Every structure is written in C-alpha cells, then in structure tokens.
Length: 113
Length: 116
Image 1 (cartoon, chains in turn cyan, red):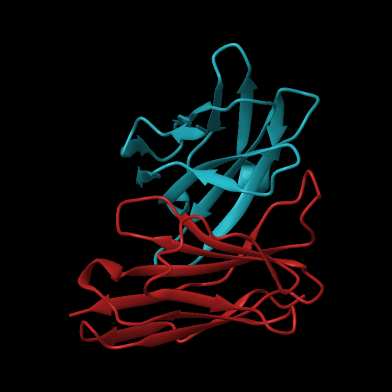
Image 2: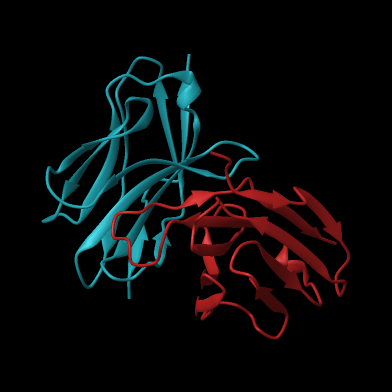
C-alpha cells in the first residue's frame, strides 16, 4: 500500500531561521512527490514537485525540497522563515501512470516574530 | 485563469438531512477530484472523474454519497442522509488530464460541512 508520513504535527521556528518540514513515503514504484500549503479557510495551494532529475527542487515563495531515494524522504526547506509562512503543509505522492494522490496528515508550521 | 470554484463555502445541516456541493473546475481540465478533509487529517480521495466517467470511487461511501459530472465539466457531490462523522471540508480539485505525469492538482477553496 502507498503511504505518506509527516512525523511532526507541528513545527515551530523563529522568523529568519531556516525551517524544515519532514516527509517520508512508501510506494511500490517510482514516486512523484508534491508539497502543498493550506492557509485557514482556503484550499490547498501547490508549492513544488519532484518528477525526475535534480534531487533539489525549487518552488514558490522561496521553498525548496530535497528528494532522497535511499531514505525515501522529501523534506521541505526554506533558508529563512517568514511569519507569513505560518500555515498547514501537506506532502503528497502519486505513482507513474496512476493519477491518484496520497496525502500525508499535514504539519502545522508556526513562525514566530 | 480562473481557479476551481466551489459552492457553498459553508453548510450546516442536521443528521439524516441531505446536502449537495457544487464544483466548477478550471476550464479545459479533464480530471476532477472530490476529497474529504476531516479536521487534523490530510485530504482523502472520494471520487475521481476523467471527463464524465468515473476513474476511482473505491473510497466513496456509496450507501450515502453520490457524485456526477454529466457533461464532463462541473460536478455535484451529494450526501443523503448525512451522519455526524460526515462533518469535514469537502475539496474539489482538477488537473489537465489523467495520464499527464507531471501535472499537479489545483484545488478549490472547499466547502465546510457541519452536521449537528
């Protein structure tokens, strides 16, 4: 069975510090990996994706993520956090030739001034 | 381009009543998804359409939930009768096509359902 794990329900960082939101996955084939962000009372908004190629992918709002095949991880990172980054972050995986997405349970990011 | 539209944004009903949600995807997007997001959890796929055909409805509680996309454009999700555990946000998403490897999904704002 395919699954996505976000081991931290909440991450707290101070503004200006680097942030990491963790994601690991378990799939039976080659994964395509995505990060989405959700602000209160809003739908999910696409941040970035890994399909193939360079393991470090860059996305919107200064976010980046590193694909690590050996550790089956796809952690979201940002060098310098902003208060406005505070939101709920979801990792998702889909398989080649299957258009079904599997979402993690979400990580709440709190950035304090 | 216009995003995914959903209505209503909020709905409060009593258990055993019925409710319907509407979704209009991004123009030209062939694939449409309905998700249920319970508080504190990630979205769970309920049903997936490719044009007006159902691709996956394995997690749709078919005894009470139904969905249609008659003309391959907008879609309606219905719950009848509602239970307390149906309280959740119902998200609609669309993507350009089914077989597109790299396509992400575009989400609407969701409908927050409260069943009392």
